[in-house]
Length: 182
Image (cartoon, rainbow, N blue to C red):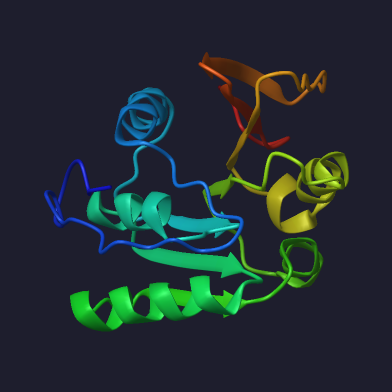
């Protein structure tokens, strides 16, 4: 795993073998960011990375100009890994929370421009997660995009879906907020 573009381009992530982590491959990550580049300017935006794991996606956002990153993961070893990266790279604009993603979505009050979630493929309340993000005031009342990485067999038929892409058994479904004008 590496950072593909921007300020931290070429940074190689130290080896990590956490429980229940499935880091997004460089190829799939590059495809995701090609999609995002066509939809949103990452420069100066606020980003939330749910089920952050190694922090791979969020750190790519910071590298490409995001001004704030909130990474959320409930696994202590993942949080410790990200804390070590934050310290090593000296990134004060990176907040890391050890917290359940659903709890975070409900408690969050900060408006953000991009939400990324990569729950485990067997994550049972995935539809609750989608509904909670899409119904959260901080999402509905902003000009935001929510990107969900999930197993390819899941299909979301919601009025806010504006794009779905599949790469092998990995899919991305992109949702926009009610105020988004894509």
